[in-house]
Length: 596
Ligand SMILES: Nc1ncnc2c1ncn2[C@@H]1O[C@H](COP(=O)(O)OP(=O)(O)OP(=O)(O)O)[C@@H](O)[C@H]1O
Image 1 (cartoon, protein in one colour):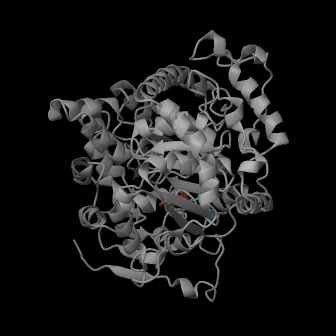
Image 2: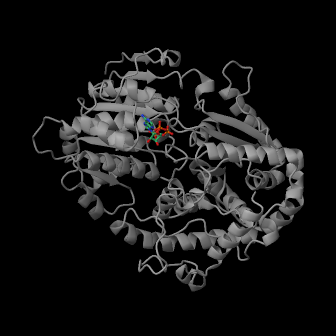
Image 3: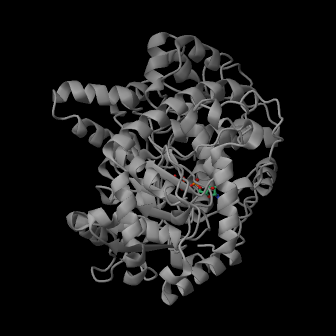
């Protein structure tokens, strides 16, 4: 294998001076350009600008560009164009392109993006999404044809090969393009053996593309394993310029507080309207996610939960609902942390046994932090700090996507201070200036005004309450998942049927906790909250996105899911009298009176 690599530097400072080429000028097929315009995408991002022509020329490419910089289209557009215009009329026995991604969530996202482009372009290209939970017969059906493109996690391919539903010779004869997306994560998800097994069948002529947000030893390893003489696209946005690891349009803040005061601080941020919606909140354990949800619920703040324990259909549906703006707060427990914690929490019994059990309980191919394109998330809150700087980068990268702005707030307790310092120094460009700065809008007075209420409520969120809610949520979602599977097979666009931000606690929130009386809010905080509201209005985000883009269905709708309630008949949405709807109405009335 030739080892010469070409480094293509794309200086950010020169971007303005450089001629800004359009997608057409980059050589993109008019059908694809039209499809992009339909998605309101007008001009290429820097990584697309450099990668598209190289990929169209057939070069192997390693592209490193920061989160949200448009890497997916950077490889998908030329990949599709090559398949649209492929000259070979010979019937193929295997896929022309394989896209490998680390998580099922990401594979679903990429699959949808490809399907939508194919549909808009009206071309005869078939794409299949494979997951390792599929049965052999489902895999065989998905691979019949065969599809032109396969999107999968790496574990699927050896499974298909050993089941005989995919032949090594077919891959060797057919494969023209292989993409390793989120390459920095593929190995950490434990796919090394799967990728090695697959690489043995990848023909020498196959064009290989490797996309990643951060550079790491793992990326180097994959590069050596798969690529031949690649072009290395290192936009200075990543690479060596550390302060640019996170898009410039994301402001990063921190709040120092005791671990036991974190609930109080997040309450103050949300209840006093000091952050812009939508808000994605990260916790390091599933139990902490539930503690937070139950706590916020008591103050009338509804949120949805996302973690590796939930069934896959529910997870995908929760993501779709959040992206569609059906709720404003999502509490996510991210992948690697979950795995570690779950294993550790059970450590008092036999460790080996408990790890196995933990593994069974949660989905090892789950991942919401990495690569998932959350739409219109303005604020990311680290309720707990992630254990590593790269975890931090990927979490914060869920806001400020493409050309949007965003903010992040990390709550840092004294025992997280070392970790915080490590993240700070990793991000520091020149060794001096802190990238993450103290959050200026939350005053001590504002926090103290809510302390009494917060501490009172926090005591009521007991371990037992958390355990029960977690079990209830799981039960609900397993039932949902079955319904969802059947329903969404025939109505893939129907989202507004099951809500994932249901209240879990047995008692509805007390009215006096829903609203913060004016006398409790100091003038500085009132002013700050006004500024946030104005900023939101300026961004055209005054209303909650709850129903945006969705027609409210008639209550008499005969939809099979409409009457479904995993919590039993009392909370059925039929008849419009359920507790949640009433709470919503009461809340809205009160909000008008005294909105915070
Ligand atoms: N040229 C463009 N102009 C405007 N928006 C774009 C453009 N290209 C992509 N986008 C949008 O930017 C968002 C982020 O893109 P994408 O998910 O590809 O980022 P990414 O670089 O893969 O990020 P990550 O490393 O986090 O996976 C998406 O919503 C996508 O539709």
